[in-house]
Length: 236
Image (cartoon, rainbow, N blue to C red):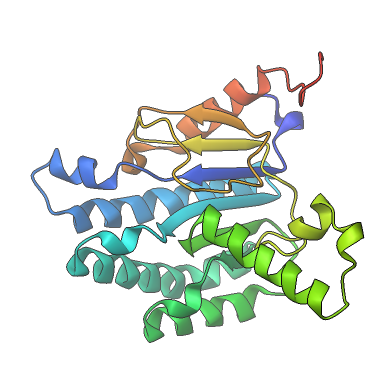
């Protein structure tokens, strides 16, 4: 891995917690707990490597279809993680952001998240984006509605509407698009994640289930990215 060519923005679809738990004869929440530990290790390592933005897909708009016990357990783990590790994140100068409609989450989760957002808002290190109640299509619809409102109000001239105007109304406004999107667990799809932002991202798919995805596996994905030629529709 060339430490001089670390992507500015890396996004991760953390997949495989349930299968990891099932393979051990344990409930799905056991896998999610292990997944939280893996996430902490990757956040710390990404910060140490100098990654500017790290975005993780923690809970999608489609995940509400899961059992009430699993959903409740996931939110409980999120609260535990942000409360337990807030001091360390702050000490490491990490700025935490949330993308998605997190206001719809349980009150305790919202309060913990908002406390973390407020505490780390002045930090200048890595931006750690947690995608919660997030869906790429929902994000685009939200941005389109914002554009429509601004055009109707005369804030935006429809004739001047361009990609930048729409991008400025996304959850990730102001952040660079991810150069690299990693998906663990062997599946090979985006699952409604960063559909606009990932238009030209390099995709790396790992067969490793998320709880087993170590900093070494993270570096392997970066190495694969560094070995590719990014042409953006041109000829290089």
